[in-house]
Amino acid sequence: MKKQDVIQYKESIIEQLSTLCSYKSIYTPNEEGTPFGVENKKCLEKALEIAESYGFKTVNVDDYCGYVEMGQGEEIIGILAHLDVVPVSDSWNTDPFTLTLIDDKYYARGTSDDKGAVVASLAAMRALKPLEHTFTKRVRLILGCNEETGSRCVKHYVKKYGHVNYGFTPDGDFPLVFGEKGMVGGLLKLKSDKILDIKGGTVRNTVCATVEITLKDNCFNLEKLDKFFKENNIIYSLNGNTLIVNGIAAHASIPQKGVNAISYALEGLYYADINDNAVDSYHQLIGLGYNGEGLKIDFEDEYGKLTFNVGVCYKENDYLCFTIDIRFPVTLKKELIINTIKENDKGLIYGLDGIEPLFYSPNLPMIKALHKAYVDVTNDTVNQPKVIGGGTYAKSMNNIVAFGCDDLKHNYHIHDDNEFVTWDSLQTQVACYYHAILNLMKI
Image (cartoon, helix red, strand yellow):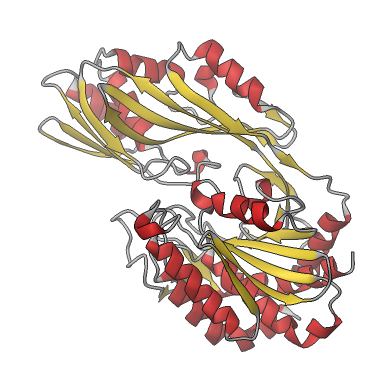
């Protein structure tokens, strides 16, 4: 299959993408007896219904996930994609749950993360249907409903069915991801006598785009605050004692591509002479850094730097609380990160825990087979397999690496307002997944 051959599937791909994106499949735990929410369940059921209409075997795994299967044999090639999405803000230019085409871009939540990859994977399997009788392995498209909030869906699958023999998750970058940074999370808790309330952010793994802070009367220098925000090109408003600061959302694995509203708000207050213990501590431990400099965890290796993000803030039981999301280099261990934080956090960060990095040798047959599929479709030999800061299903199932779906041609605004995908990207995905399956079949 060549990239241009995918045009025959365009109408159905766009129709299916529109259908799946219409579901507000945002994590809502234990809603009406479902593990992740009614909309997640409905979205899964619809995806399985679409797959079944093409003659594939489908199984709903207790509403945690489902799978679509073709082929025969003992070994399984797994494709792990997800139907759940991160929350949306009210700043979208279009309805985030209605697929909208503007200037060759299809806008909706999930188009790039990860419903577009779901329909592209299904299209690749449809294209392979005439060859199914020759398969010596089974191909299983596993559709999860909890990737964004813990991947319990895949853990449930593994407990019930075990791991796959080879495979990929189309939820990272092309040309291929052979390593994923480790993760550490925690909660920074600060006491303030000047900040009466604070609320901002949507999820821990996204750079906070808007924060609202309620302050005591006359507790900072307005001229210095205004000067700080103007010098840093920060949009803000002050209504009475309520300060609203706007930033730019981005995925927590690339916080430097966003503008953290929480950090800029508190730094602004620091330089506006608020003289508050909480603001002072935030300045010392976090400030405007994206690499954990204040906690002395700004480690790096040949594959990249540690990144640090504050995603959500709120007030609870007299404490200002800030969620922390750290992605650390693949050659390090989580104990080093956690112990170093504890040496430098003044006892203010709680609940530290994490996940070890993922790393596969670039010389493994599975890695080479996937990379070959990408090169054969795109003729791109410049971009090479890499390590990313994002965490995918690869950490939850053996013998899986991230392969696609980001083709590196645009900022698709994953986890941000106005997420989109292009038809060109979808074409690339279908063709790459098609050849990836065939190549893995030969191992």
